[in-house]
Length: 141
Image 1 (spheres, rainbow, N blue to C red):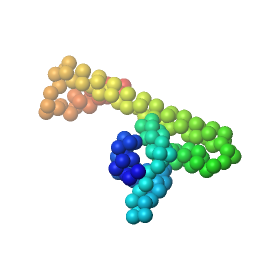
Image 2 (image 1 turned 45 degrees about the horizontal axis):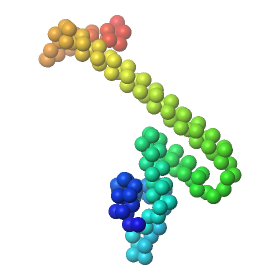
Image 3 (image 1 turned 135 degrees about the horizontal axis):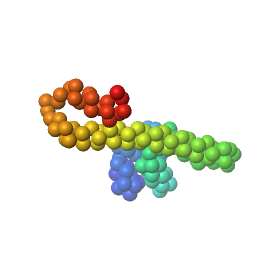
Image 4 (image 1 turned 45 degrees about the vertical axis):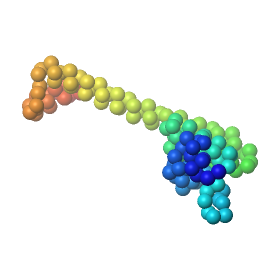
């Protein structure tokens, strides 16, 4: 099928399909005129890629796991799977750390806004009062 039909069937834009190809994630066939030809197995692979991307995995990890799945041999599959799962867990842990930092920042801003409203801090902001308030929010003296 041509790229427009592959896009419709997979729910992935033609631009994304080209990007997946550029990244080495898929290798569609070619018609004699040079147009891309997507078979059902490529569409199935696109759906897996999209699902992994939506899960937040970087292209680098997706490329690694897909390469292991399509090399045709079972040699090293357990090791590759364990390494992949370790990478996924590390990625998840980094995301959790970023979320924790963002949550702390949001909580500090919530406190700042509550205090600013309570003390009637209004524009133009009193810089000294804002600094004192921010320091109190972060526990700095």
